[in-house]
Length: 151
Image (cartoon, rainbow, N blue to C red):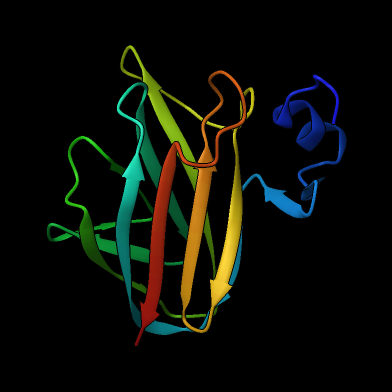
């Protein structure tokens, strides 16, 4: 790979995954989830302290239930969210779930810039996301989370 950033590659490829050596790098994880209610458990295994790392989740159509609020998208910040969290998500029709990494610099949320990208490992009903923020060189240990879906 040249010195071109991951963001430049994603832009050129219209968001399609990038081949980096033997790995595929994704700008976001996307999956269809069936209608009804499901639980999604997110376990944070590692997070770089600076800049603050986060995980953004969006479901459409549908909502996440967080602290008695129904929200179409949520951000779980490593500095304020427990290491293990379970969210309820529901939709009256099949929905699309999108997940991507974000980071905060001086209180501003960033995504899809510089060398931001994710390695996605799928094992049975568990997913591991190894995320590189857009700051500095590619480093897929900036944020590492495991995600498990249950009904």
